[in-house]
Length: 477
Image (cartoon, rainbow, N blue to C red; front, side, top):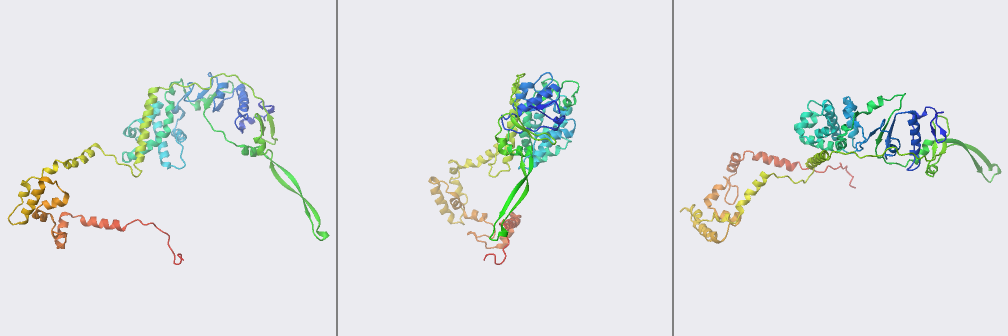
């Protein structure tokens, strides 16, 4: 048996390397078992990685002389160096895959493109002597798309920021913003002492000395797994006897038969696990050993370090990154609006000026300018006896009545001028009297009129109709 014990139960020698699995709700005693195992690990000088979701293990075991903390919001966080941790291109790809997970409903193109841009940008920055997390975030999110295109040239990500697909590049950048903004909390972490990598820390383990621990803090949800635990504890087999009786009118029909059936039953039921008191558990060991029910006692431990010390982050840099993130998110929303219907079109200042110019003649002073006695007298000729009557009517109404729209404007025009405006082959009433002359005039003034008419006819013919299923004869009956 090994030296390590769970309560009064010693575990099998060297079985601690085969992993432990602890099931239980909040307050059941999982942390108490882990603390007892941690005590043995500290006594033996083992290297340990603790995923601490509440800071309780940091408070009880952290030793600043040999231990490391990975929490960018903690002032004691080690200066983790991304570029020393990732040595090859596949290492950066794995980091990008962790940082930017694939969605379940979204198009994988956007997340995949964001991964490629992040991995290539971080890989290209590895040779920069002034590299930092702030510079990486600025390169990915802050600089203009033209500079990002120049930075990524001759790399696999260059095609994703091409000028020909600039709108697509802006959309990819907006998706990248949602995930890369987590790196903002690493800004300035390179100034927390000597650079640290998990790769080198694992290689530094020594059997003849006391090794340090690595604390990683996070938050995690607890789940109810009583049914799963009941299945993991194991099952038992037993023979179940059964008897059958038969009766009948004939005495020969009366009889009794007995039999045995093999049954499988869990050692511990679901209700047994749910009703366990705190610090009480079932332990199963690898090999042909039975399950054991144990009761533990809580052991108080002294506080050796604060569980969390907030790190001071440069406010100017934080405000600048916040402004950059807000700008990128607004840019993404603007690009997304291009693919949504009923979006009002943005009108530039020049278009607004041009749109306001035609409204100037609608002022009340403008219609009075053409109402001068000289204009109606110019077309008067002796061959047109009707024109004086028109001129008199216009002169009578021109002083007191303003212009009355197109109809009155046509009345004010001489007949000769109206005849000159009509196309050849069209009478004064608008009827086509000479089709050949009218078509010749159309070909001369509007050579593409036939193509437009043909296109309009094709549009009218190619009307979308909902495709229905083929109906066989007799289906309607």
